[in-house]
Image (tube, rainbow, N blue to C red; front, side, top):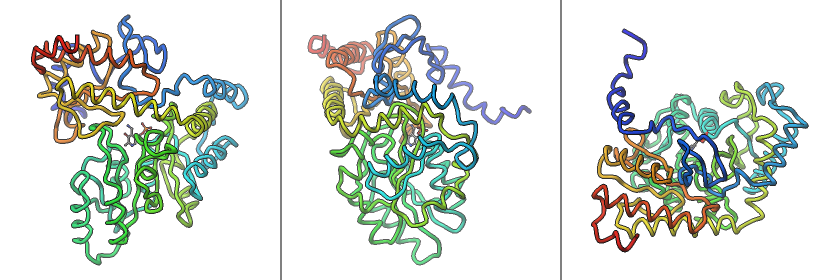
Length: 405
Ligand code: PMP
C-alpha cells in the first residue's frame, strides 16, 4: 500500500475533469500582459479570476518601488522575522498598516494563510474555544487545528446560531474567539457584522475578522467590512492579505490588544519561516499608499462589480446572494461547470472553477473576481460570451441569444 493510496478517492474525479479539457489545478499562463489580460495556450484571455481587485500588479509606482528595493536590499532576507529577517521595510509596513487601520499594533506575515495560522494559534490554545463560521476559508480551519482549541462551527452568516452556540458553552472555562470573514471567497457574500459584534459583546467573546477579500473593496477608506458596517471598535483583530487588493503576497494582523508583542514570540508560523523579500515589502507599502490616496480605484471596482453581477443575473444565471467583486455563477452540476469553464477559456475568458469539496453546500461554481482595471468593453465581452455559452449549454433560454448577441 502506497502512502498516497488514501487519496485515491480523488483520482477518478480528477481524471474525469482532465479528460474534458484543461486541468483547473494546473493552469499555466504563458504571459501576463496586464492586470486584466493574459496568454493561455497561445490565446489572449480576459483575466476574470485573479483577486486583483484594484489592478495594482502592474502599477508603475509599485513596480518602481519593488525594483529599487531589490537593488538596494537584495533578493531575499534569508531568515525569519524572529532572527535576521527584519529589515527597515518590514517595520515601515507594519507602522503603515497600524496607521491605516487606526490601531496600535500590526504584525506582518509571509502569507495571508500563515497570518491566520499564526494569529489563531497565538490567541487560543487547549482549553479555549474557537467559534467559526461554517464556510470559513481553509487557512482558518488550519489555524484552528494548529491552535488545538475546541472548534465550534456556527451556521454560515447566522448570528442567532452563533449566539446559541456561545450560550451553550455557559460558564465553561477558557477564552472565546469568534472568527468570520468580511466577504466570503466562494459566493461573494458579506458577513452580518453588526449583528455578530452585538453577539460578541453580549457574550464576552473576542472577534477576529479576516478581511482578505474586503480590504480595499469595502468601506469609504477601503479598510473593509468592519469600516463599512461602522463597527471597527467591536472588532478585536483584523487579519488581511497582500495577495489580493495590494497585488503582492503576504499577510498581516492589526489590533489594539495589550501585550500584542508577545505574539511575535509565540506564533510559530511567524517565527519559523523566512520573512517577506524586500521587493515585496516595498511594492506592498506603495500599493497601500495607492489604496489610501486613490479612492477612484475602489469606486471603479464597485461599478465594475455591479455591472458584471447585474449583467449575469439579467442574462438568467443563478448567482450568489449579493453583488460584490466576487461574482459566483452557480452551475447545475459539476460536469456542466467543467464544460462551461473550458468553453469560457476557449472563448477568451479565464475565471475560477470551484467544485466540491472546496465549495459551500457542495455547489459547482464559476467564480469571477472583478478588478477596478477591467474596462467596460471587457466586462461586456464577458457577458456576451457567458450569454452565448449559457444557451449552448442549455442553461439559458434561447431567446436570450438576441438580447445578448
Ligand atoms: N483568508 C481568506 C478568506 C482567503 O480567501 C485567503 C486566500 N484565498 C487567505 C486567507 C490566504 O491568503 P493568501 O493567499 O494571501 O495566503
